[in-house]
Image (cartoon, rainbow, N blue to C red; front, side, top):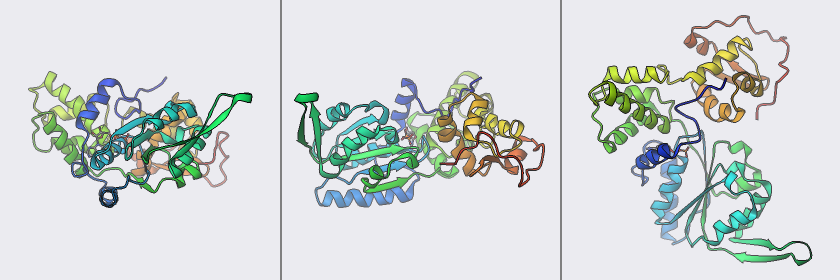
Amino acid sequence: MTIGRTISGQSLSPAEESFNISLRPKSLNECIGQQNVREKLAIAIEAAQHRSEPLEHILFYGPPGLGKTTLAHVVANEMGATIRCSSGPALAKAGDVMGLLSNVNTGDVLFIDEVHRLSTPVEEFIYPAMEDFKVDYTVDSGLHAKTINFPLRRFTLVGATTRAGLLSAPLRSRFGMLYHLEFYSTEELTEILNRSAQLLSLQCQDGTLELIAACSRGTPRVANRLLKRVRDYAQVKGSGVLEAGVVENALKMEQIDRLGLDELDRAFLRALVNVYDGGPAGIEAIAATLGEERDTLEDVVEPYLLQIGFLRRTKRGREVTQQACRHLGMKLRRKRSADSQPNLFERDVP
Ligand code: ADP
């Protein structure tokens, strides 16, 4: 059975998407956290503006919901540029990219989400566009095939990926700036929630936003989504004001524990303990046990479990830690020994 995730799945419904957009900061000053990245961006933007040049190509990488798309829009805004958005899977053929590039004006920002999912031919088609602002486009086929050299206006490509490791080296090397987004601290998330609560005209009692922030897995998107759930709960079961009791009940209903783990996180850890005696276990095997996609586990579940020290990634596979067992109130059935049998599904950790 697939365990649905309510708080950090990657595909967003149109309603969620518009909710996200309404809360998205528009300028670097409005953004909270990611101090280091913001400082470097501010300098690069100021320098480019000084020289009246478009920015260099930028790659943002890190787990979902940390602000990669937000920063792409912020960069475009700060540069006073138009942003055009697409994604790796949507750009299946050179013709799709050609459609985008031929409409690009000088200084425009071209945002490609999930840039690691570009096909090799599309990647190769993009290289000269990124480097020399031109593309070689082949029209017709067979005897009539003609390659047209098509000059482009200078644009800035902003790529976003949850998996920088899957990006080919030639593509990665064509980005002038590569920024890793980190998980946010509880204080930063509280500040983000404060801003969101103001935008939504929500009344909150002291300490309630901290409570939500602490359960948000270091991720602004999760924080905003939980705020929305708590707002609904407060409207229906309470007076509409966010009070500690209301927040606790709403989080309980969402099956979020005090560390922000949801049912999918716990199922992942429980499978490791119960089925694989704590590991090591290959990610494919765990995904099969849970009936989940490997990508979902790698992108959405594992980064936070690794961050809080509940999971170890070794060459032999994933291992649960004692800390995670204590949190779940579970015991490992046997002690792992150095000569234990290797797991049949074991894969190299990428
Ligand atoms: P990603 O592209 O990395 O998946 P998004 O840019 O879509 O993440 O961010 C998700 C939501 O989190 C945004 O809609 C925005 O409201 C919020 N958010 C992200 N980063 C910040 C930030 N630095 N400050 C305030 N809110 C943020």
